Length: 120
Image 1: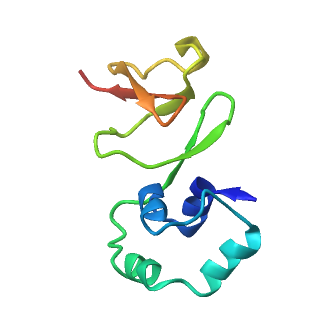
Image 2: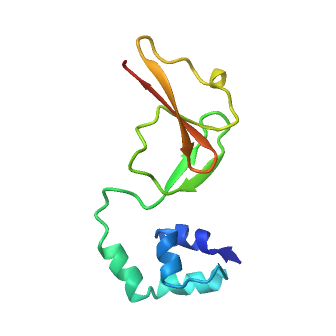
Image 3: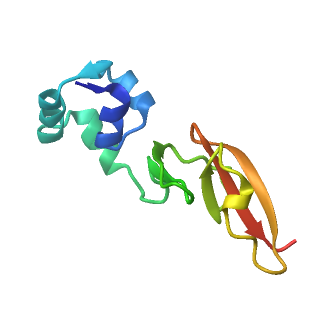
């Protein structure tokens, strides 16, 4: 059995769309495979409407330990130099290059801090 969130990830749709179109909270691999083989009209339309400018899901990967998480990207996310799990210390990352300052951005996914090194 897989969760609705995992189904949304595999179908590359927002979780809200999965809920709106009444995908069950848990489904079998066979049920998901059937949706992928014979997508309903709403899924076909959703895929046809994609511009490719913004991904539906991104994979966040910790630059310290390699932990990964799938998340919906947010418009306010800057370009990160590094991503770390929220329990790693900044001393576990390389220092910013000469002349750059470092900013930490909390609230990335469920458990990440974004690190941005940029000129002041």
